[in-house]
Length: 357
Ligand code: ATP
Ligand code: MG
Image (cartoon, rainbow, N blue to C red):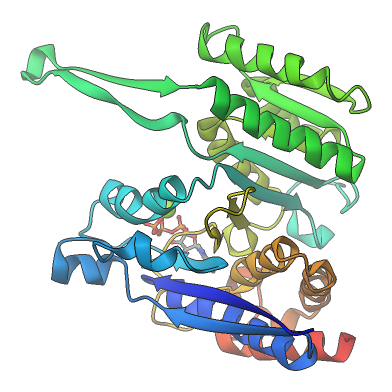
């Protein structure tokens, strides 16, 4: 039976469109190689250019328009001259919130040992999944300017940790650890954040009673940051809050090849709404328009999309093709020491993927 997946494309700004078109190339190749799968694509011209014309990052009924899709494939948003907090809150965070994409999945996997700055670490030793809370916590947007007068200025930014929000992300992580037969590490900071993180730790322990088969660990975020660099082999599945997850996953990117390779998925597990897949990097105005952006992060997020669609064999085929292409210096972009253009890398990728299947 033929399955059709409806994909909304939001290429966005800067290198966003450049890397998204390579991801779409890969999707179209899959469609050709697998008679049981087809995709439909609808492109939305939203982002900072749209903002400069219309005073908003996306159409007023944008959320309504996106609702009917199976997945959203996002490039990047951000533009010099548009404050980052506007481009972020008015598009990316809005979609995450409106569609209750409360799970952020960031694979921290070293696909080629030459990519890590860590001495003597192998691909076996850096291979874990960070599950970041994606809907509330420190990024709930709760705060205020208490006093505006300069000398007395006081601002407040608070974290919001609900029972529902905390339990569901932790439960998701336990399920994932159980499903994949891996250990689960919770990262928090209860010694200093004496309300939110005490609560987080309690929920972690409580939910854990339902998963006696899952081996667990609990680290303070400062210690965990150190272990990410010195002993990444400690981690298999990691669950953490919005802010800590944001920071830790950039350390994760640093130890596995940098921003050109970091992929992320924003998941609504109940599938009431579309989930969103994106390279983690920004619009990179310094290199945009030159055709030299590395599309591997964007392609890796297509692999996550395939897993989410239940087409895991394609998710795996994409990952294994990324491994293959990382062995071909001449096929890589300049951030990885090669001389290929963005689209040359994409073309070669499709060749390798096709040869494999
Ligand atoms: P934004 O303001 O949208 O976040 P940014 O310039 O901060 O954009 P980042 O993603 O944070 O972009 O990336 C920082 C730098 O890393 C970029 O300026 C660029 O030089 C490099 N970089 C990021 N992504 C890529 C990529 N896919 N390929 C090559 N270099 C990249
Ligand atoms: Mg940035």
